Amino acid sequence: MKWLEKYADHAYGLLRIVAGFMFCFHGAQKIFGLFGFSRPTDNQIWVGGFIELLGGLAVGLGFRTRAAAFLCSGTMAVAYFQFHWKFQIGRGFFPAINQGELAALYCFVFLFLACRGGVKWAMDRSR
Image (cartoon, rainbow, N blue to C red; front, side):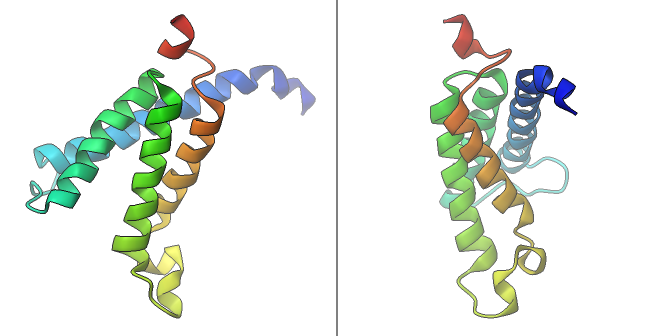
């Protein structure tokens, strides 16, 4: 499978773009009340949705990728600990039980993107 190595930057670029725009979509759901989401009344959820919307867009476009991805990663860490895990002892700790799988996965995907930067097809590279 060594032949796949030459496509590593392409695959990474696709991961960044897809993750960014999917994250942006979650923010749009929260901010604009789309697809079954009611508009947030809680300031923390509104701020989180705003970070998802703009941070996801920035990551997807590759604009200031490291900073945007780091902020998105931190947002998902807070979401997991505060809204999913809630510091429960026992079964509530596990993401499959507390429905925090997506938040945990986004946290680490965005941490990886923050460490690596825009790489391929990113606005960062054109500057």
